[in-house]
Image 1 (cartoon, rainbow, N blue to C red):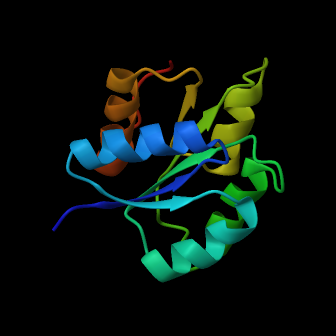
Image 2 (cartoon, rainbow, N blue to C red; image 1 turned 90 degrees about the vertical axis):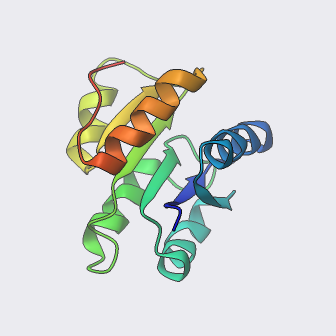
Image 3 (cartoon, rainbow, N blue to C red; image 1 turned 120 degrees about the vertical axis):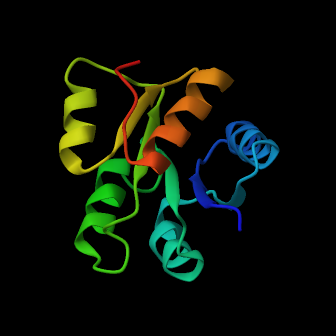
Length: 128
């Protein structure tokens, strides 16, 4: 049975790219475009992992991570945070919020898949 990944990305092209790459690598994907839909979609799909854009227009990705960690049904799901706006200290904040791993955009396919496999195996990949 393929592992299911929730892909949370407001940019249509990025969301399609992430989903296409994951599908090509044998994952089932559940795309979500809006931050307010993440928790309901996660409760419905019960994914094995999450790829989460931190810069969502309607909610902070850090708040989404906090919501996952506060939800007893979702807190165990590993999250790969992805952001285009990586400032000093952002990676530490994102990891402290509860993300398993972190990638800065633009994302290359090989490091992206290595990071996804890492969170799914329970071992985060080294800093990117």
